[in-house]
Figure 1: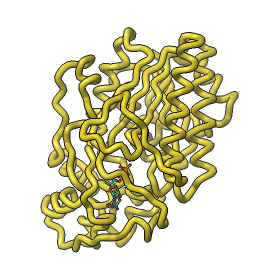
Figure 2: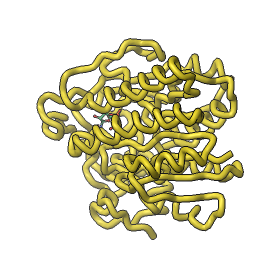
Figure 3: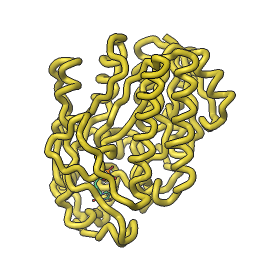
Figure 4: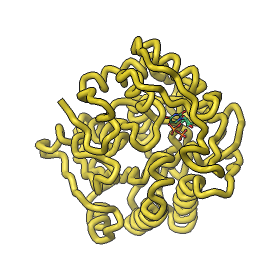
Length: 334
Ligand code: UDP
């Protein structure tokens, strides 16, 4: 197949590129390299089945042309990370809302199948111990929730075009996807804590660290995507994708400290000092995978120790551990 991936130079997108090229598909990527990196796709640049377009997806004509060429679209391009979104409000709204509306409309007009990446943030402050796809979205008032709302708008556009003109779509709600190539710059907790631990720097746990998240390795996500997308009968559906690796952030920090034999001190920082006093951090975020497993069957997710070990290995192999270097936008690679 000819497949377009928006945001294909990003953390998740670049792993999807690897998987699809391995499966012998022809892959087109459009990415403005704002939060993605050429380093993530450099190893594919010589592959004749790989085509990289360095462009913003708000460039309508380029996007339309790429969509016309392909049979399947994965829409990942998006501003990511709570910190990035709080620091870049206009850019984030544009990429999360405007560009999503644009590509979903193009897919509908051209009658192309589209997989739209959404987020567990959709559920907002819903504290259910098992979030199901039709559960309530409980959203606060502050700008922090703009990411959640932007993704909800994209989901609604899929639904609307699906209902009115038969758009063939799948929405994937990702729960804390982690793994190699993810960077800590934009706030993601696991690479931040691993980087801090490996450099024996203070490990930054926000608030009291009792927040619970469910971490899923990016390889599991791309494997699951293949299983879902291959099945053309799966159409106009929304899926949670998340493992059963639920853990509090303080326990995660302790685990990372132990695995890396780090001398770091675990410190507690109030989120209001970082994001302002109206910032709300969801307390618990655990997916129900019942709908997903009913489609793909049993699936063995990598466990949290395997995930941490893999990320640690990647950090050691990839970065020079000069003080702070791993948090700079231009990462130094060996
Ligand atoms: N967090 C933390 N220390 C950090 C970065 C994040 O304790 O250096 C916390 C954050 O407050 C949240 C959890 O880790 O409760 C997961 O944060 P992340 O940004 O990775 O993903 P989110 O679940 O917020 O989308």
